[in-house]
Amino acid sequence: MVGSGLPVDYTGLHIGVRHDGRIWKENEKRKQSMHPHEYGIGDKAYVGCAELVCEVKKSKKKKVLSADEHEWNLTLQHYRGRNEHMVKEVVQGKEALNSKWRGSYALICAVAKLTVHMTTLQERMKGPHYDVYGPWPHF
Image (cartoon, rainbow, N blue to C red; front, side, top):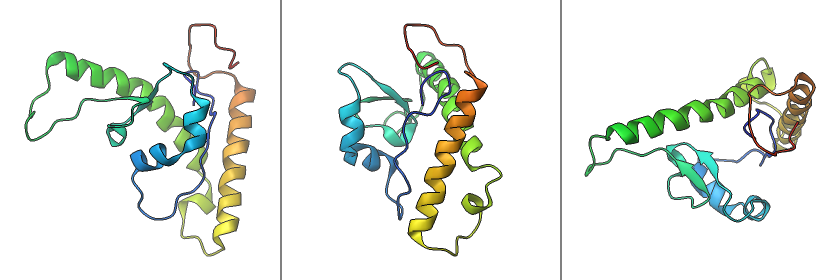
């Protein structure tokens, strides 16, 4: 999604336990849609993805974050929360997406895609959730 809260991309359902970073790296369409020197924001699962700015992780070697790193993480979490709000909007109250599915894989993919598109339409009709500044024509 873009900074104003409008969803702009959906990759579909992914079977199994494939890591988010791997899904990002394997998605050629997404890589081609980003402009040079354009970056996205990702959580700690996306560390190592060159096109994404991520939080600083603690490690065995680095057990404590500096004050600047902690502030950086808080700032990214603030803006990443916008994405989490949109995921909640897509999933919340949709029985098909919140319960055990007994239908076919093709049908749940269609339900998920339709849900994402209808949620995007709903969000476009509401207008931007968040103020953004710049020459972006998203609303």
